[in-house]
Length: 114
Image 1 (cartoon, rainbow, N blue to C red):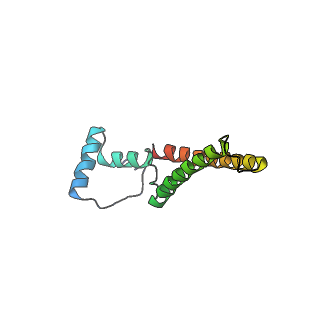
Image 2 (image 1 turned 90 degrees about the vertical axis):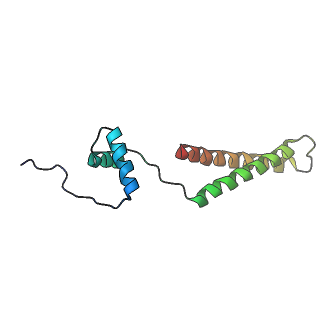
Image 3 (image 1 turned 135 degrees about the vertical axis):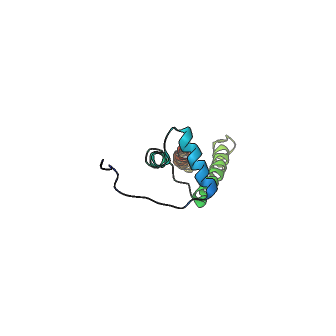
């Protein structure tokens, strides 16, 4: 008798409809159900879902970014003489840093979503 390579049994519950879909997907892939489920579980890279609160946070960061850009335009405007030159340069530097940080996080989110 041939010895199995796999020695652990995994069981879980599915609905009739889910079982039909699993069987259909396995057949379309040319695999038996066991091989299909094993392959899809171990070889596919399923990205974890981003928590809703995190998505909302990124949305808020985007809105803040828009506000920062509007403020930066006012500061850079030739008519904005209300700021001391050193203060103006400091604000511009801080806004640039914020935009860089926000861009990095938004790029990471976009990669995560794809």
